[in-house]
Length: 239
Ligand SMILES: Nc1ncnc2c1ncn2[C@@H]1O[C@H](COP(=O)(O)OP(=O)(O)O)[C@@H](O)[C@H]1O
Ligand SMILES: [Mg+2]
Image (cartoon, rainbow, N blue to C red; front, side):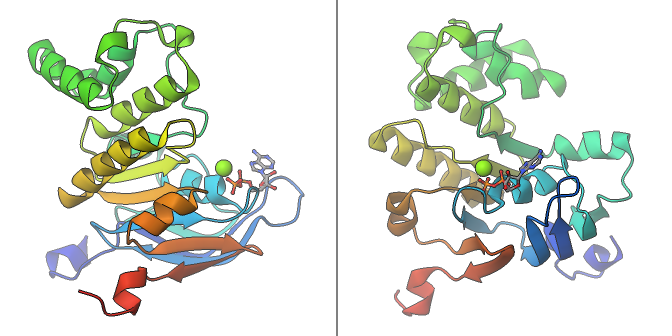
């Protein structure tokens, strides 16, 4: 807070000496250091089991580190109260690997949830939800109950729900794993547009296609540690 008042840029997410272990298993991540500037865009890579979901879970406040400190929006999540964390979560959009939609509700109602929580008027909600569902090519399925939809459709609903609030942080765990290439590109456009408006974005992906096509730095997890590779074009000094 004090740093922000002094005009010093604070990272949106800051991890220092962070380790994660589940129960008495060996550590999944050890002594991680990571700082995400406001408005940055990163891919998150690493083999299955490398710890991508664990790392994202700390960023969306669902998992506290076994050791070290994780600071989000300037608050140490190790000491934050439940109420504080609930308020912080409203500022974070998450696309879960397993979607976590409200299966008994329609596509429309799932996407409307973050706006209703904020108390937005239904007229405004209607406009925004329909516009976004049109973008993810679900305008014809918006009244269908989620449990009846395909994996690819659910993934697009999960993405629409995560971005509709224009969150300060967007975390997406394999967000294009279930959709065709043309839709994947459209979804990337959505993330890029959100980032252009100021959202800090982290996208976990296995897709070499996605990583190769878009010039963003990459957080790579391997052997319990983390490396950040800069965007390729900045390495090559391309314009
Ligand atoms: N809730 C959990 N309980 C026990 N082990 C877990 C749990 N979540 C993840 N793990 C283990 O931690 C490791 C990293 O998992 P995860 O973060 O899901 O990796 P990734 O997303 O890269 O596939 C794996 O070995 C996984 O089995
Ligand atoms: Mg995962």
